Amino acid sequence: MSEWDNKTILSVENVTKKYKNELACDNVSFTLPAGSVTVLLGPNGAGKSTIMKSIIGFLRYSGEITVEGHPNKSIEAKRVLGYMPEIPSLYPNLTVEEHMEFVARAYRLENYRPFMNELLERFELDDKRYKFGDELSKGMSQKLSLCCALLPQPKLMLMDEPMIGLDPHAIKELKILMGEMKRNGQTLLVSTHIIDSMDRLWDHAVIMQKGKILGNVVREELERQGRTLEEEFFALTEGISESDMYSLTEED
Image (cartoon, rainbow, N blue to C red; front, side, top):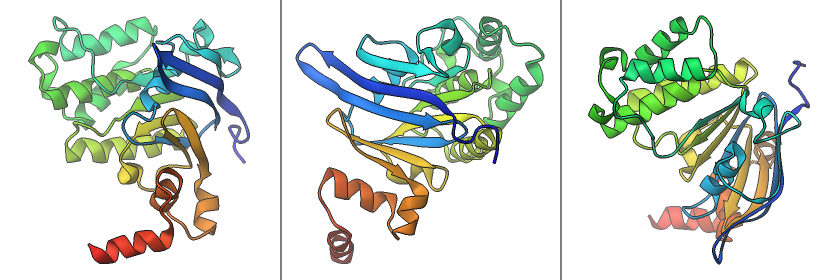
């Protein structure tokens, strides 16, 4: 048993967020065990991005969110939090390397250059070091946003739709890196609407729809029942049983 077992790194309790008259998150509660990979799964508009932005501290909400027991907007929490947004937000007048150096200085990182170089090489940005933010394609912007989020090697990493816009090589490297992060004791919360994008990387799945949590799934328990995450997802969100899914597949 590792030092991370049975520890809770993130606690989300009764979080509710409204945009005018629209209830984006309705009394959302869940916890993340340290050293695990949790996938936040749901269709578009389920409230996934809203809860991610609430955790990182971008939104006002009712309820309580703590990171390692500290309020999520505290300095102590921000020191261990990393975030990759769904839509990259880069500085047009900074180069790729300057973006990375900016992050390193903001987090007061030391001896960061070897890991920076490794990230740029893995995600095929090494030859783009001196390109400015406004010169990058959508895919390259996504990869740079990912590298910036990974550079501080946070204990808790939030990724909002990280696979969208990445090429096959970058997706492969990201999945390998996620496995490495988990083995290093880091915790990941990955929001997606693509059920199979996380393959067998996930340990837990929080399934959302219309701002509510419909299920909190443990992979080991699901496998003992002989069920797949896809079956569980459609059973919860659409009321489709395993036999119904089989019938649909046969018709296809």
